[in-house]
Image 1 (tube, rainbow, N blue to C red):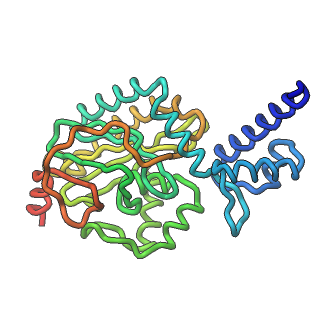
Image 2 (cartoon, helix red, strand yellow; image 1 turned 135 degrees about the vertical axis):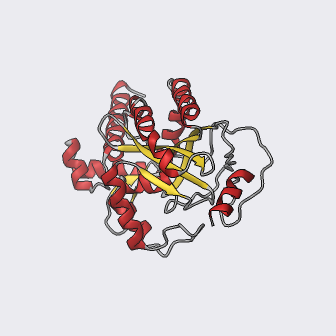
Image 3 (cartoon, rainbow, N blue to C red; image 1 turned 90 degrees about the vertical axis):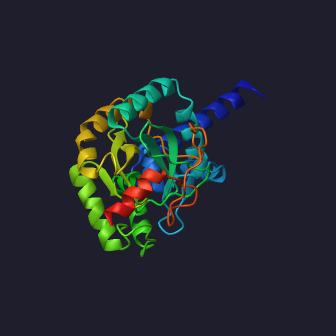
Length: 298
């Protein structure tokens, strides 16, 4: 290959990476004309680059709006980089300290194609145990992290989720209507955190706060789950400042808007035997203590 050809290839790769980065940093899907203008590229060039990235799965084009958003290929690479980043050890230490201070399980969660994906988690010594299976679907409409990431995420994604109503009820507290979930999104944005008051698992509540990158975009959720027996919601709320302080220390790792990728957890705890709770997502297991709390509350 001649030096000229090699130089052209390098230039093309750099242009493609710039286009990919612009789509990743956009909070909403981007039109081709906007990409061309933002990157100072001819429209035919932008189209060729976008088509190549789309074929590779790094971006995808909405068939109706014809706008581009991040694809699963980029999401897979992003989460893999996050899971194996140089700061992983420090991040886990912070999460361990938070789990010990609060007395609940701590999760770092992202969204992939509208589904929750766990980057990492740390168990606590509290009675609650949650066994999360690889590729297990986690409902976003009744989990603290799911509602949080939808509330602060793209409007397009929220609308798609709301159109899927009525939602499955996992407990008596589950929000099942589009109107109810839309109101919940407003509350989350106003107060800056999300709550799950036994909406997903009887006897278990959860709080989640946003993790932002340097640009201020919400790219992940930091959540703590605890049994109502030891940490009722009003008591768990006292730890919101602890969650937010921990989340703020993560932002350096999310300098680029790391979108979710893969549903495979990276820190599975040793398997233990616990009694299953009916009407919860398949793969979710909680301790007998948490279930007994739910019964006594009725």
